[in-house]
Image (cartoon, rainbow over all chains, first blue to last red):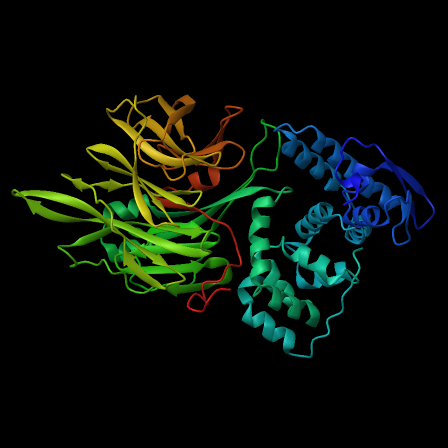
Length: 163
Length: 399
């Protein structure tokens, strides 16, 4: 075990470099909320510059903003903390458009930000929950690949889900 | 636009937040969605994750209740059982808590609640209903069924061992359905009483049996049955941290608990300094603790006290203490408190069979006019969630 994972008082700074060259200087305690970064820090130890060729700067910035809020809120461990986090999470995803949501979700998944993936997938689900099959195909850019009649049969079997 | 190249694990995460009907509908999107959804709904890990997410929901938290009701006019004029059944109606009420702030109206939706077609012997008005993890247990006389309305599934349970004619006439009064997390098993407790004569006087003795889904059989629970000199009224159960609680009224109030893991009944003492006369005692769950509503049945305006039980794991005798947590009132048109919802909201029944929400923190009252507008009698209500927990495979071993 590296010493970095056991002490919370260290304010070591990490440099994260996004695919478009934008760099972010963040506290280790913030960045290691992301599983992928935590692994890199533990494995590579002394490396201070981490390159993330799969994440664009705009979305990396948003992911880190989320990490920062959660890291800050978790340090003061009073009871209302959970409520504050929930409230802030709601605000964070409130006005995300589909495009941003998609890229943010891909970034959070790539960086193994489990809690953030939870939040973003809940948001996606809340947007698609009541949609029709055709609308889902449009949203997810999927073409139906059923043979003629197959889709009808599935609809019939699950007719109650279409009421 | 969201693109089609979402990794499967992300798609799974999205699916774990969707209600069953959306999932089943989305099977029609494509072959790969069809295959993925079909395998997920049979995967116990996914089913559990889906269940946890109903609780974890932060974007639109809600509480859902199912009410069994009937029109007032009908029950008064034609009290025959056969005709009564036709006019019974199940309605769901979903209260959304996402409006935030204290001054805003909680959104609510009330819909007709459909069950799969159940055995005709089951009389809803006389049945007792209990809910856990999306499965509703309905029981009347010797008919006990489990059903998951969100999956349109139901299954009858084996015939109970305590039946009419057994030991001088056993009356099953309440059925509790709960999950035993330690044994990963679902259990049904059937509680009732039988009458017997002693010294020319009618006495009543409580008896109970338990069904385990793993054993797929009933067995009587031996316990120091309460012997009562009048026919007891057994209130609706509450389930908290693996333990059932019933309040029993037979001249005085008694609380019985049943731990689903060790399958043992215990008697829980009531608060010491309880004012005994003419007070209604009703069990509830408040902030993850068992609690009591204490109120005067007739008196207007009404004051409702809430006493919470100190955590004493299943109420080992004499070790429980009760603490008065809230005093609500004066309330004018309230008939009785029903249950606490999320966010400290208390659901109550009004004198005209309507429903009203009272926010304990803000002290604000909200009419839930959707149910109130139809003039009905409420028979019973249960909490409910839409889950993917199947009752079809109950006879197979559940991994």
